[in-house]
Length: 362
Ligand code: MTE
Image 1 (cartoon, rainbow, N blue to C red):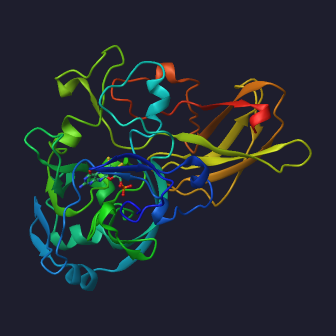
Image 2: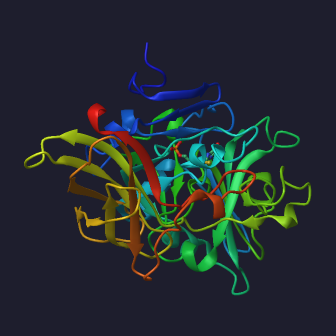
Image 3: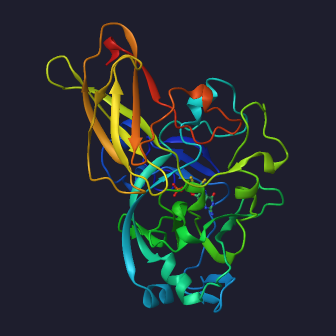
């Protein structure tokens, strides 16, 4: 039996709550990730929501608070479809954990990421209808699920700055890849925030609250923070951790296959940039970073959407290490290794992706 309609080859980190990761070899197959292959990151049980009784509450610093049924959302606002990549802040944590243990967190490989076509309405349009107060600063989202991991089992939530919320690319989505949102991905309605950590794309959306400050929800104010690396465990003082927001520039080698010209192998993978930045260049090294080859990039550069890449490589005899790095539209590239990136909760690993290879196993 498949778990929540997911492909049986997904890596199951836990089934309750459901946390599954896409094997890298499958991730590189297509620009849009099939829903059955798409990773799932849940902090609590999937809530059962009656779509007929469902109302989306829009409140806080607004002139006209709203309580919208799904029908009203569809009827009052323009429907749009956007492609967006969702990536977990904990993507590539396993690499960090090889340096120093990271307790109590899922050891995600590089497959806690995927790209889907999301259909819904623009958050901007809904906020305009609610008439946002001029001194508002942030837009907070609250889910219908409650996680036992949060103190007092609070609902999952988080916020984004108001300018991002009004930017037009943030969606309240009811469909994923042309089908109604599956329960595991937030049925009946979720937020999709392109360019931000996946945690801000709140599922099973109950409320959109306009407020002066960033969210005080456990999952933003206490968890999902970047704690200083010299602490073995996160401090109790959440203030010691930086709040996360935009994704970091990252890339991964997903598969190596025979079939290049001559003795060459074909390397394929993804690269993703954060915020409004785009992936502009990807390079791959057959020898741990001594020499580099430019990869060819598919699709045009777009903020919030990954780019799959492909390169042919000559792998020398014996074991070695293939490394990948990307550049973004701000001219930034990725740090050389995990050591400078390590943090106690294992977030935002943007170091070169290094994969050991033995020539004979390729
Ligand atoms: N929204 C709710 N309500 N509850 C959650 O546990 N997990 C978040 C986010 N939205 C979560 C949530 C995290 S950490 C990520 S990475 C993304 O959902 C994952 O989205 P997906 O499961 O659709 O891939």
